[in-house]
Image 1 (cartoon, rainbow, N blue to C red):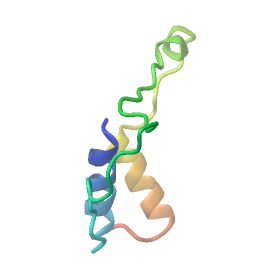
Image 2 (image 1 turned 90 degrees about the vertical axis):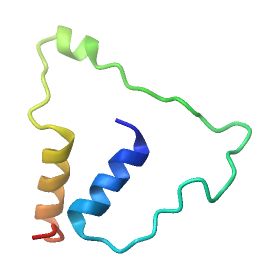
Image 3 (image 1 turned 30 degrees about the horizontal axis):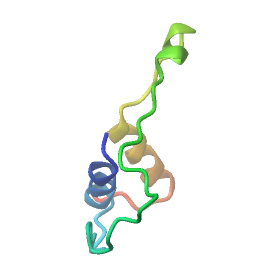
Image 4 (image 1 turned 30 degrees about the vertical axis):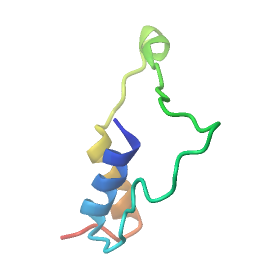
Length: 69
């Protein structure tokens, strides 16, 4: 999942009125543009995620009592 989509989902689920100014600051010369986690080795060991990204975000927000009703 792209960081942008992840942050937009958090904003949506939390009901935040934060303005996300993506692209407002120019990219730096040494900034990583394409970072991905490969969890295949974990899966090869038998690990599987218990929650989807959205379920995980909701659980965190519920724990902090900021989820949008």
